[in-house]
Length: 138
Image 1 (cartoon, rainbow, N blue to C red):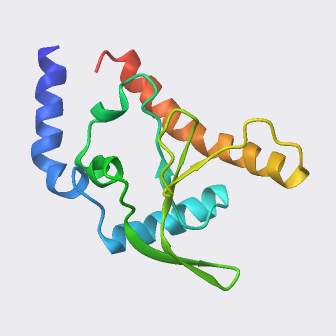
Image 2 (cartoon, rainbow, N blue to C red):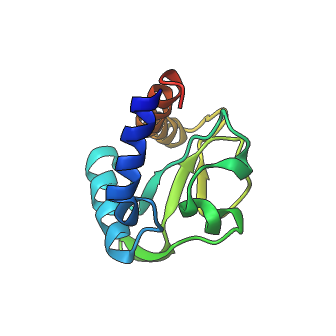
């Protein structure tokens, strides 16, 4: 435990200013490119999964605006349409915020089924990361 604490403290001290802060417009644009290339979701900032914590305790200053219903002002374009705010993929436990895109519960239309499959695939990344953290006792 002491070694893990020392390592964690070193990571925070070394990288905290870069990674434990709200993303800049440049950061968000890089996220858009990465998520569109990997998952096919233009304008996606990320996927949120704090299913094992109470929502108000999600551990990051990044979530402060989200808790107040604010989306990062980072425009993106899809099919010639410009959108002002990015979004996060979530599941049904999250509040009804415009910046949260939830999967269809029981899709009927083929396009909705396709979206649900793609969204579930994209959300697996963050679920795996939280699973590793949970398994390590953090």
